[in-house]
Length: 97
Image 1 (spheres, rainbow, N blue to C red):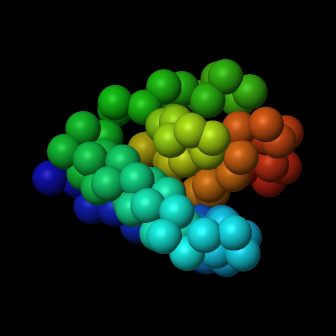
Image 2: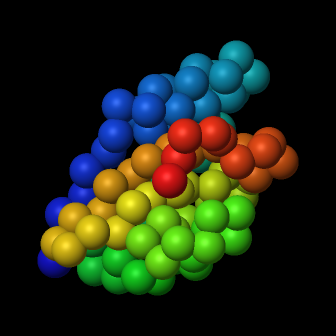
């Protein structure tokens, strides 16, 4: 099984998502975060299941979609590093390679 590592940026992203949604509904915020976490946990067994990020077209930079969020990760030998989580309607963040 592949190890999962969350980058500091991705952890901040997840906290921000939860805080923002909590302004309207704490229950819905928990559900959204749970859906994201389940998708990330699945990567431990199926690390290549995400698609290659179209904006970068690099085989080791992949993503899974948990609407409306994109979970971007770097695929390394025996490691999946979660790089960032952001709304799919936004531009791809600079500095993620």
